[in-house]
View 1 (cartoon, one colour):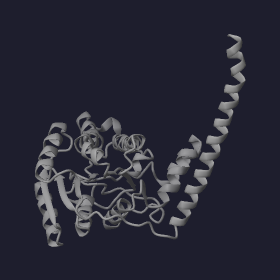
View 2 (cartoon, one colour; view 1 turned 120 degrees about the vertical axis):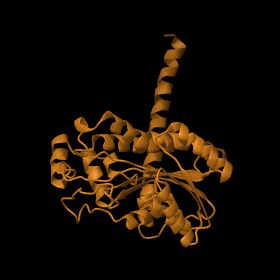
View 3 (cartoon, helix red, strand yellow; view 1 turned 45 degrees about the horizontal axis):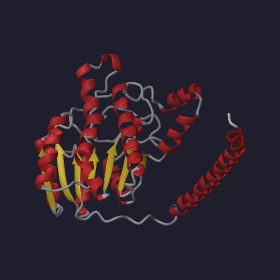
Amino acid sequence: MSSATRDLSPWFKKKNAMNFILETLQVLGLVLWYSLETLVRLFVPTKRKNVSGEVVLITGSGGGIGRLMALEFADLGAVLVLWDINQEGLKETARQVKERGGPRVHCYLCDCSDKAEVYSVADQVKREVGDVTILVNNAGIVTGKKFMDAPDTLIEKTMEVNTMAHFWTYKAFLPAMIANNHGHLVSIASSAGLIGVNGLADYCGSKFAAVGFAESISLELLATGKDGIKTTIVCPYFINTGMFDGCQTKWPRMLPILDPHYVAKKIIGAVLTDQVFLLMPKSMYLIAGLKNILPTKQGVLLGHYLGAFNVMDHFRGHTKKVQ
C-alpha cells in the first residue's frame, strides 16, 4: 500500500461512518413520520380515488368474488372486461352488471392456465376495448387433497391458474401501464399464501408464490420510478363461495368463514385507497405477525390452537373456478 493510500484510509473510514450515521438518522426520522401518518389515518379516512372510466379486467368473474367485484366496479362507473372459462357464468355476471346500470361490459372466454390463450385474448381486449388500467387476478382453484394423494395434473393446474396466470396477465397488460405510469395490479391471494395449512400444500405453494410475485413486481416498479402503478395484495381467510365447502373453523369469532359480499366491498375499498396489503379478518394481521416471530415449536402450537391442522378434514369444495 502506498503512503498516499495509507493517508487517505482514515478519511474514507470517517466518511463511511458519517454516511452510516446520517442515513440511519434519516431512516429513523422517516419511520417516525410514516408512523404518525398511519396513526392519523386511523381517525381521518383516506381519500378514495375515482375509477370511473377505468378499464377493469377481472379473471374468474363468472361467479363468486369475481362477480361481486364486477358489480361493485360497475357501480363506480368502470368499464368492465370479464374473463372466465364458464360462458354461462359470464353471461349471468354481465346481465347483473347491466341490470345495475353498468356503463360497458365485455365478456371473453379465457382459460388463464393456458399462456397462449391468455396472450391471444389479451390482444383481442386491447383491440376491442383498449388498455387495461386495473387488473384483478382473481381466478383460482383448489384440489383439497393431501400432497401425496393429489395427481400431478391437478398440482400443475393449481400452479398454472393460481400463480402462472398472474405472470402472463402482467406480461400482457403491464407494458401499457408502465408507458403511462398509471394502473393498479390486484392479486386475490389467500391467507394460505402467508401461513402453511395442513392438507393445502399445492394451494399454499401457489398462493405463497402469488404473494411473493406481486410484492416483487411492486418493488420493481417503485425502483424504476413507476409510482403511478399501485399494487393491492388480498389475503383472506376462507370465503363462503363454495370453493372451500366443508371446511370448518375452530374459532368462528376469531377466524370466521367470510361473507363474499363483505370481502368484495373490502377489496374495492382497498383498491380505492391504494392499500397494499389487505388481510381478512383483521385477526390475520396478528396471526401472520406471530407466525413470523415465534420459534418453530410455539408456531406449531399456535397452529394446533387455531385449527390449522384439521381445517381441511371435511373439505368437499366444488369444481367451479371462483375465489
